[in-house]
Image (tube, rainbow, N blue to C red; front, side, top):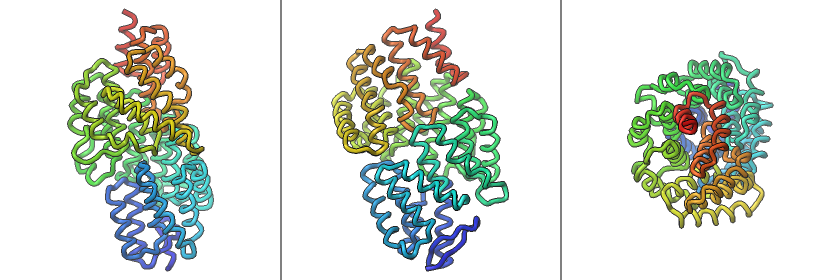
Length: 442
């Protein structure tokens, strides 16, 4: 085995120039959310089963699918990578260490391993992207900002891949309200790496946060070929476009977009597709729109996710979907599973489940029973833990909408006004919320 340098001067272990080139392509496809990344890694490992980084990246792909059933695959990939420790270089060994920590649910240890890598090797884009994604699941904007901005000084436009870093910095800065700088960096990222969905996505976040609905819709316009061969991240970007349409109160347009692009098809949806669908449908429902059979169809297509404890973010959306589909038995069974999950260890996601998934399940059972007072009080008691859902502010505000909707139905108009004041201060130009406020005043 030999060491081969990528375009940023980092060494990677491989058996030949051919394998090294294939590995670098696979990493690039991971960074650009190409759906063939796993297929490319399998092809590498068939020719060179002693390529440590291919095993490690394969393990990370299993983790990022956020399915408990795939965790054994991640541990298996880690075992292969570890068995090659005599061949791997020190940086690759740290990648394997981060994989093991994350697979065990110790996201903080994974963060520290990634930070060790990028401190010594600031141009390791794979470590930077994985650290960035890991930080999103903490639900802490300050962490998301710090993990990427502390490395910005090590990059400039002439370093290959700088656009990816600018796109991640855009996301981190947007989440803490530094919109002007975020947009500037994000758009520069798109210029340098026009194939990077993350930079494109991060700029959309800035426009959504500022309530720039027309700018957002214009920004989302890309030729159909732009989406070809992409991973589920494509679906999430379509959710962003649908969100701009919804916030403009074009409800017919939002339903049409849901039915034409977002609704689950013949392929079994993963957690991200389910969450995107549930999030948009609940917004429409809270705005007084009848979602018809869409809730039932969504639950039918995604029922496998009710038993798959791997991510609080997914559980939160599934709880809401079950409630809106009036699946009381399934919701009760999921609540029992969440109780066992939360009590079975100290991993970050298990703690998050106790802080947000369990109270949410209690609130939604009360809502289903028609007791909106208890639903409101339960959500009020948990609202300062909403961040433990993970994801972005744009995704977590679904819980704020849920609380407002429960309080409104409970007839607690003073509370609704206070919550609306807060919501509209941070989410300007939301026509559905403007209309709700006007309705309270009349």
